[in-house]
Image 1: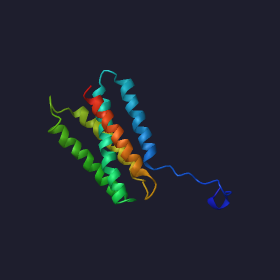
Image 2: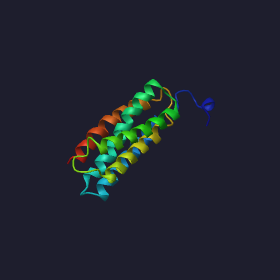
Image 3: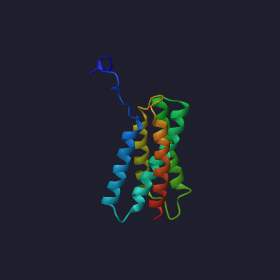
Image 4: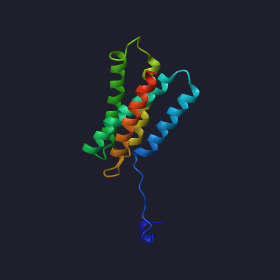
Length: 144
């Protein structure tokens, strides 16, 4: 039924573009917990990678809304920042390519969800809240 044929009061509810990817990230994070119960750092790096990317993309969605190429470029930047932090700041024991792969996967899934974000669809808000929750959860799990 097209919008023109809808009766009054039957408004179309628009879901923020970021919301489905946040759900996917949470489901994949839960799957990490089920599949690798002894390696909470796997889930932690995955969630933190997604959370950091959502934080970066939430700001971009506010400043430059509706620009998918910017989202792709910033997702690449988030992955590269993950490489840099894994190789320097978080190299407490040694460089771990599995941690890098997990945080990169989280970053890419977050970026995929934000590509379709449109101006005024509340994706920036969803991404910002997800960033906070995922970064805190990821940090706790990575260092548990």
